[in-house]
Image (cartoon, rainbow, N blue to C red; front, top):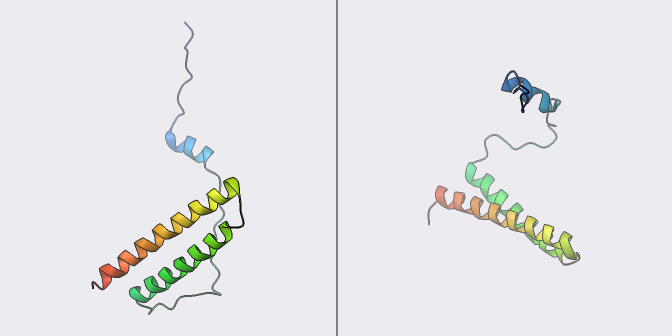
Length: 97
């Protein structure tokens, strides 16, 4: 009798290892650093301002695009805005009004 399906892999880890690409280790550059004594509130405030700036820049750039590229960029703007909302909520949680 012929078996209709092949045997499963010997182990999941072997199959996972075969399918997972090798990623070289990466050592980050130390050119730009954030001082370790900066408070969480300060970090979140700067992140909020950076996200707000990124949102404005991407929105302005979207006016020059058409079609699917514009839709893609506006989707990115929405992700930026949601991130900004999350950071602002974290700031509110640190220092309630």
